[in-house]
Length: 419
Length: 103
Image 1 (cartoon, each protein chain N blue to C red):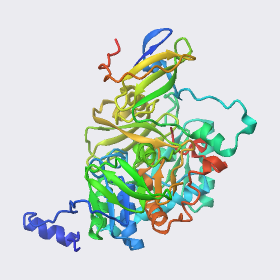
Image 2: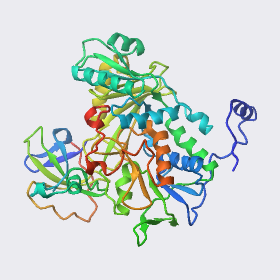
Image 3: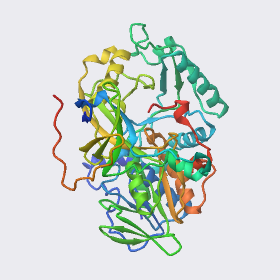
Image 4: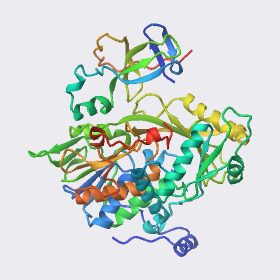
């Protein structure tokens, strides 16, 4: 099916003709009785997987089933930070695969995802932080991932609003900077993948919750039950984030996940003041500025498991305490909105992208608090896994069985991200 | 913020407590006889229930004691609090009362 393509010229032309004649970006089809493959979950990871199934593996009779609306879950609720400076070889390969796809994603999808490699700076506040970050810098270099150590004055030069004085509880002792890291427009990622997948024939079906997974005599997946009818398929890829445990339980599969609320908030919009992304794992502050001008601030997870998509205010104020110390200029900014999403966390804080004990059932989960950055790479290797019934070399280590066999990818202990 | 009823101290705000995860997990009595799969299930597999969830809390900034609670993870309403060692109460079928606010 042909789609209007976006270009500077087409935007100018439509502007001159008062923006009449734009097509809808994707169809709203009724579910068919049978698909070659079905993706459960219409976030970035699921829509991307459907796109790569159609684009790279020739599977175009594919549906994406979404309980709510596409991009309404964690894809639309995160703080859009993109980086790949993870410690372990397995993680570096996966996240850097993703970062390389980000760099050309707008061109590949003909949709501006506003990828902005403005640099991600992670602050060190203790001697332990310094040692860990320098270890990351060296490990990353061995893996061909850019990451460099900055002294406090260099960090201040890179991010002028930063307070490097010793008048705060945990002064800045240095920073690790990944210049290729940055942000992207999260909604555009979902919309861009949806539009591109739809153009290749993928059916995107919203308001269609999966309520049952039917299995045949040999245990393999046969069909999905939904309020909009039974859908026959022999391949199901689950990319349901916080609700993965619920979907997998329909097939009798238990996954090592716990679902926690994770919150974020934005300030009132202001003129451009913040040139990069700054993260502090030690004192829990994650901040960047959106193109609209809001400061986008990420908080930590709440203490308890929940599916409510909301959390407690004290978790946000804890983060704002840190922000106000690091960036005294922002003390008088008003916070405009806050919200929560439900993140599925594995015991080693690394994802699972794998086949399951059920033939025809595949799972992409466990991204915890940092799945947005991995969207293109995760979707790409997940599509490969579904299409070929075997993992791509990059996601081969990210199995469910690693917890049995002792091959953890322990980014929790490596403290690449805060939890 | 949740209002949590410690069975020893009464109603207290959530910030006095730490979360202890899924309740009623029993350490294997014959550890040497477990295979890798059984260890993985004990160490890593959790119900992650969407609905009524039995969980442990510790009144870390109070009496220091562990206790258990039933909470609906779709609303965060608590259904029951009970001491460690007591049996898990039958979960009431009636919808939970609206939450009280912390004084």
